[in-house]
Length: 226
Image (cartoon, rainbow, N blue to C red; front, top):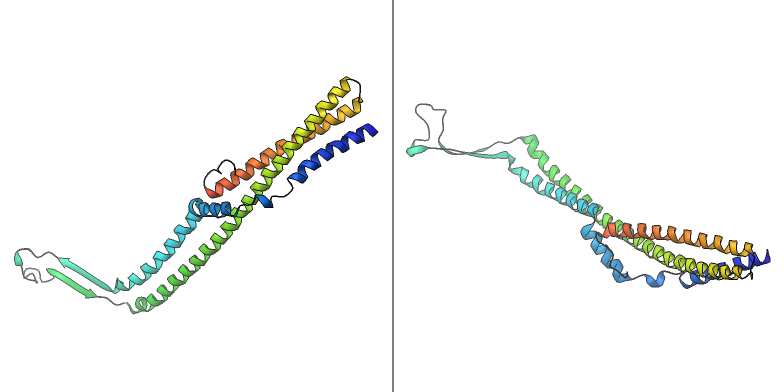
């Protein structure tokens, strides 16, 4: 039992030394990368494009509301061949030439200022929503970036841990073959090695997921080495 406890302690010390060497990601945070990723997200993220299009549509509603004042005016042109008179003597209801008229619907006319005011208010709301969206987008990019760095660092730690555990297990296997350690100690090292390899595989999956999430929001692959 003492031998088992000793080998377990040794393996934990190996893992602990790897973790302590990589326990902080603060030194890996690059402000230039964050700014670049935020700019890429604003340029490529599909939801941000939808937000921009929606804002433009609301902005166009303001112009349409202003132009609607012209609804009270109407103009028409009737073809008058060979210099015919304006009034057709055969059919006095048939009028030739350019005609201009004004139709005023008082109720509709009074509604116009309120329609314009409402359209402007909606556009202001759309602008604030776009500003809030960009703020939330920046936070989301940072969150995914930090998570990516965390999973990348964790993978490095657990990869080193798995390598250390494998080295210890191989060393104990040779000692076991020379009858220098018991079967219990050898088996314990194999169990610890298997656990370390399992954690490494899980870390690889988490790293790939974090990488995919960051690439999804910035709209392109992360350059090698970052």
